[in-house]
Amino acid sequence: MSTRALRRLRGKQRGQEELDPGELSLSAGDSLEERAEPGEEQQDSVCVPPPSEGNSSSSRKNKNKAQKKVSNIYELKKKKKKKKGTQENGLVNSLRFKLENIQQKENHNYSETELKRYFGARAVLGDQRPRQRNRQFHRSTWMTNPKDSWPRFSRPGISMPLLETKEGTQYFTFEHSREYQQVQFKFLDAVESMDPNNIVALLQLNPYHIDSLLQLSDVCRIQEDQEMARDLIERALHSFECAFHPLFSLTSGTSRLDYLRPENRAFYLALYKHMMFLEKRGCPRTALEYCKLILSLDPDSDPLCMLLLIDFLALRSREYQFLLQLYQDWEEHRNLSQLPNFAFSTALCYFHLSQQEEVDHEESNKQRHKANQMLQLALIMFPGVLMPLLDLCTVQPDATVTSHTFFGPKSQLEYVQPPALTQLTALYVGRTYNLWREAPVMLWLEESVQEVLHRVNDKDPRVEECQNKRKQRYQSAPRNIHRHVLLSEIKEAISSLPLEVTTQPVMGFDPLPPLDSLTSYTRPQRQRAGSSNESTLSLFFRSLLPNFNLQVSCVELVTGQLPFHAHALR
Image (cartoon, rainbow, N blue to C red; front, side, top):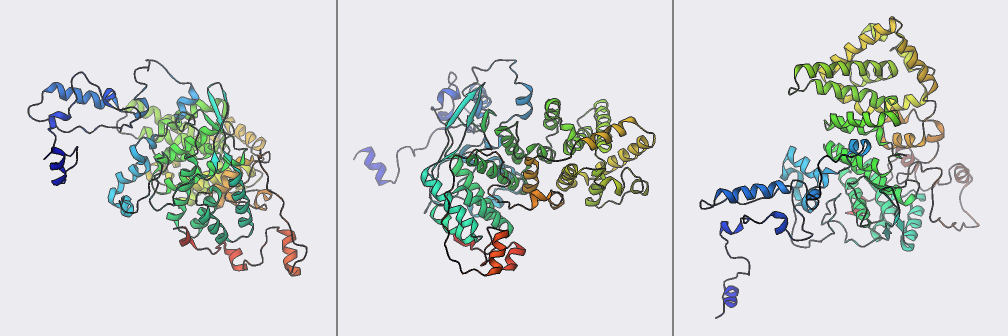
C-alpha cells in the first residue's frame, strides 16, 4: 500500500507530520526577508520556537537578528534604501500622519489591542470569536474589523479616481455610479419623510449605503444603542475602504480629499464619528491617530476643525511631546496661541512634563517655569475660561477671585468676551474640564490665578494688549467652527451659536454643508400632486417648515425620539 493511502487510513494530511524544532530555525546565511514570500504580511514581532539543547548560539543570534528586521511592517521592503540623516519638513514631522493603530496583522487593529491591554481579550471579544459555521469572509481592511454578522458585501457603486498630483501631493475624490445616485435620491426622500423606518427599509435593500448608515447611527445613538451605532459607522468605513484607489494612503499624509465635494464629506464624517466612539471606549491613543488622519486629508481648510480637538486627544493619550511639537511648527502660520484650547493645553503639557519622575531636577524646574508663563498668559488672554472651568470642576473659587472684575461675572459679558470667543471657550471647557480636576493641576492653577491678579493690579501692559486683541478679533466664527460645535454636541457651546446656524435644519449625514459646494449631480425635482387633503394648519406649518410631516406626533417632535425598529438592521 502506498504512503499516500496509509496517510488517508490514519486520518492524516500532508504537512501534518511532526517537525523537529531544529528544522524551524533559520540558517546562518538566510534572512527573514529572503524567506518571506512576496506580498506576505509580517507581524510586528516574529514568534520563534525555543531552540533545542543541541542548537548553537549562532542560530540564536540569527533569530534575534531576524526579529529586529521586522520591527515596522512599513519599513520591511524599504530598509535597504533608507539613508541616514534624512528628515522631513516641520509640518509632516510634527503631525506624523502614520496610523500606528493599523499596524497589526489580519485586522487586529490598535483599538482592540488597547482595550485588551486594560480589560483582557475575553472581556473585549466576548461572543465575537470566530465561528467556522455560517462564517462569511469579508475583504480584509485596515480601519475596521469586518464582522460575520454583517451582510454580504457587494460593491455599492462608489469609486475613487486620482484627480491630479502636485508637488508630491495626490488629490483624490469619491464618485457615485448611476445606480448609487438613484439610491441616494431615495435616501433623501426617506429623510424628508421624517420616519427612520423608511431609511431602515432602504438599508435592507442597500446594506452598504453610506448616508443611510450615518443617519441611522445617529438615531441609534440617541436611543442609547451605542453598539449598533458604532457597528453602522464601522460598516460605512469598510465600504469606503473597499473603494480606495491603489495609490490612496492612510499613512503618508500626502493624500487629499476636497470637502467641497459632497461625495467626500461622508468619509470625513464617518472617520470623525468612529474617532469619537474610540475615545469614549477608552482608546484615546487610537482616536488621536484618526484625528491626525482627518487633519491630513485637508490640513489647509481643516473642514471639521480638528485643531480644536487634537490637543484634547493628545493630553488624554499623554502624547505631550507631539502636541508641543505641533504647536511650535504651526504657530507661525496658523496662530495656534490665539485658540483657547492650545493656549491652555500647551501649558498643561509643560506642567505634566515637569511632574515626570525620570526628568532631572534642573529640567523639571525649566519645564515648570515654562508652564507657569504659558498658563498666566492664557489666563490674561482668555479670562472667561476660569469661572466656567471651576464650575464644572465643582471647585469654589476664592472670594478675591470672584469679586475681582477681571475674573468675575463681568468677564462673561458680550462686550468683554465676543460671541465667537464664547463658543471657543465653552467648547474647550466642556471637553477638557476633567483634565483639570486633578489635585496637583488645580493647585498649580490656583497659584497662577493669584499671580495673574497681581499683574492685573500692577497695570501690566500685557493685560491691556490682550484686551485690545479680544475686542478686534473673535467677532464671528467661520462655518467650519460652527460645524465642529454641532458635531461636538457640547450643550454650552451649542447654546452660544448664532441664530443663523441654530434656525436652519441640520442633517446628521451632512451638517452645515459648505456654501460653495462642488456638486457633480443634482437631485431631480419631485412631482407634486395638484390636490391635497392637508388641513389649513398643516399647510401653514409646511409653509414655515418644508419638511413638516403631520404624521409625526408632537411628542416625537419635541423629544426627538423618532420610533424605528433597530432590530431590522441586525
